[in-house]
Image (cartoon, rainbow, N blue to C red; front, side):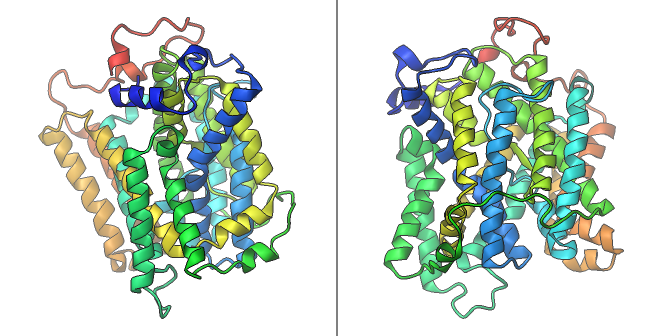
Length: 477
């Protein structure tokens, strides 16, 4: 349920019309005159987060300009197709709720060292297998949710944000390996700081779609400023074609056990994030608890989307939290609005010129926004940890996991002494930290009466239960 600030933002939004747009039924279709602008808003809210991971992975694998444009193009195309999978569904797969899918940052701490060591085909192979696992997990969701308490989920999300922060700062300084003559120059750092400040101001004081798309606004303002300062090379735009169909299996797939283990483990946690997103939509937008088939279908769609993304050469694809906030902001819970957004994404993914425009963005512009994005991920982890009782037991779990998650990436020499796949797995820090958190949470005794149970706001009603079967008081969670 939205808090008072969100309610105020809803009333202030330029798109919100309480008389006609407080649509509580996901199956209702607003008039196209309203649905099309709302669908475009969803694209704006997720655009920056969706194109940033392929840009970063392109830098790690040393991709050419053309390859970078291609990776951006397929990220947009896949996001659109997988959004339709969530909103329209296919058999048991899909929540059939207004959920936007996009390229996930959650896998980056694992994908980056894997790509650097084994190459992109190994990342894609691991993602394909992880997606299949997630489809199976969605089918048995009720039986496994107790494995992932808020302390485990919160630690993993926090460490995802922390582990990505050096990547954002490196881009802010100029990107690459730091050998460029202008690396960390006043011009680069100044541009990154400018984008960061614009993003913060828009997020704090903006209203409606501007607040929801604050990162995109910061990137746009920074990009225009960089053009005025002569910092942009438009050759990628000139070289890109106007139309192209994304091709599957361009990079192929390779399968390494370490990469698969890391991807599957993060997929578990991302599945819980999707559960939280679905719950936020139904409670905050539709005024009811999610149904069991919505939760299982949504998680299965994450898995199917991730495997589909791997086939089309891009990173795992999961539900985007930014768009959940936009649903509660506008009060429009129509899945057909998001379907329109998905169609726009597919159309954008057919235009390589757009990928050229994005790839021409100077690294410091992207870095300034990335610092904010990755910090927001870490903040989301802290918010999850607030749900835990921070007693000695949970603090010990947090201490051990963060010690491993932060310490191992900072001392890569340790990983270098271990066998290849094990060493690469440890380099991310996230995987050993997640395993440690899972193990300690399972074996350390809890205080009497402290066994984990999903909060009311996350508990699903029966598959066919009516929308008003939500537990009393859950809307205040």
